Image 1 (cartoon, rainbow, N blue to C red):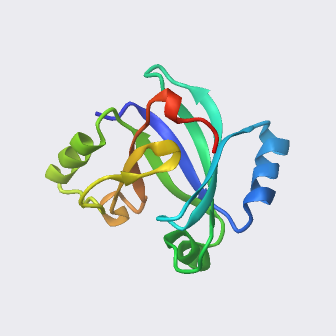
Image 2 (image 1 turned 180 degrees about the vertical axis):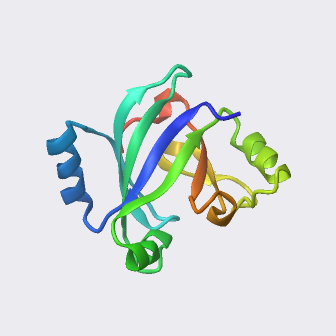
Length: 147
């Protein structure tokens, strides 16, 4: 059902400063950037490695672009840091249905568009031992070029 850790989402106040930290400290380079208006964030995906299923693992840096976004509210309460973990799956709809059958609340009725044209949904952190969890089906490789 789940094939990899797709990404770790990290909320930050200043995307450019945080990207530079990851570049200078760990040597990670930006693979993709975009503004997701629906989620209210500007983000950078830093590719860590490829995976056996053809996907990859990333660090996702998230800066809110408006004060009413979920990430802005989270930063206000918690400060910078790990926001969520995302697991890759070939079938986000099927994976969400399976975990729902197991008693985990799925936050979206239908998956939404995520980073790099992926399809995503989130699981309620109270049902996942305090961890906001995202399920991700990546777009085709040709759809993941930098924006």
